Image (cartoon, rainbow, N blue to C red):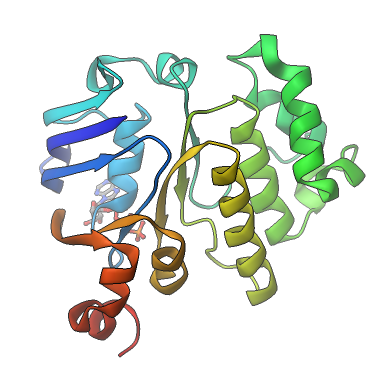
Length: 232
Ligand code: ATP
């Protein structure tokens, strides 16, 4: 489904990603783990067209995303849930969700029903200003907003960041539920333990490069991964 080859991304003179290769197969949950600054967010933003690679290709079902506008990438079936949620404050929950279908208006009402079914709390709070939601609810809103575009591939950037433990478990349950509906997932997480538990496959990134890859279970069992990312 997605094949990233020899990807390099720069911010001016700073090289954030250098020569990264990875794949995401149809129906998988793949996670990228790594310390702060490893290049994970940069890779996700490059897939969704917010940043441009300085080298390499991003093949998605035969299209090179490196040359496609971000709006076309959404229409091709890729939606991103950004780090830090970025809900639109001053707009209601419903309005935030409708923004997620801005580029895919034909399926808007069908998706709104599906999102409200999946996130009953968003339905209850549909007329409330998004700014008044808790952090966990805002994360659900950001995920619901991405689902409004009816993606085939969902990109999640640190969905559990800054959330209370009860919400962290809930967010991972929601990721599994979205995946069970047939959506392929590419997940970035600092919470490596939980990410590896739900992942089919994972890549460990450091300094803008892939250092290790394997199934989620293999990496959970790796002494190196345990020492560096799982607290010993
Ligand atoms: P985090 O979890 O902290 O977001 P990350 O693995 O997602 O970490 P990136 O945000 O992709 O890492 O950052 C990779 C490198 O690029 C880091 O060295 C970072 O300082 C640098 N970087 C990120 N954004 C910018 C920017 N806008 N301008 C310059 N350098 C940047």
